[in-house]
Length: 303
Image (cartoon, rainbow, N blue to C red; front, side):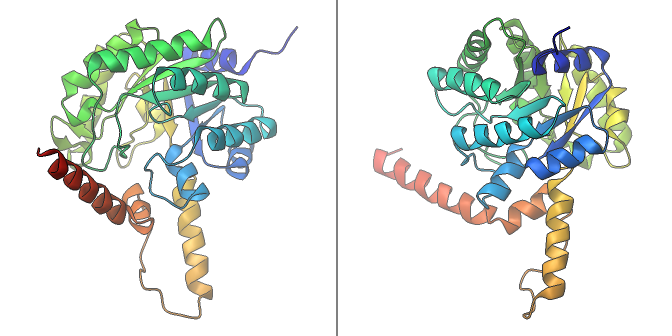
């Protein structure tokens, strides 16, 4: 009997609705995650950019750089890999090329989002959304490019920056366009940060969002005191934990460097959440520079 392709193996896991994919950023973290007993991996764009370029999740990793990381991981592990491709590295033909290259590199799936440039982490203000029709076209192009393969297309919506209803409606549009799985970002609930709500209320919102999406849903937010397994009980078909390895790895390196440093640290403190690491990687400088250039362009155009 022939061995199942990566996409087919991931599809079987999604049907079980009991899978947690470990967030990894290089071949070492992928290998350790497999040895720890995970059934799937998630290549986090946040972690890849931090470790490859030392930049704060601004979408600066190139497609060929990302494909090389996928290829190395796929050669080292047997479990299926989900790859974060941000906004797909360009327009429609570039999205199609992204699908082909990431699939041939050995990934089982990729998730592509409906935000437009400039790329922003969902926890950073200023997210720019593609109009619905362009976002649907992006998903349809990805589906067409995977052809009759088992490669899984996951459509992510960052429209929580607009409203809960918008993120739900967009997810359903992407599923109708052929996406296999929807991925609603839930950083905000109608303008309120999800993390500021009581845990029970957060869980209710997760159940509400999943129940209104007409297909399998991938989740990535875990309230304090809860586990990814708890979130599967909210109805998610699969959970990813993007920062599972990058945050403790960064904290361990920081602790070791502080202990060995001959000079006092100028920026002491913990790396307990994505914001802490974004800060150390200079997110504010990047944001200030973007805002300066945007303001200059608008001034030159008389807007």
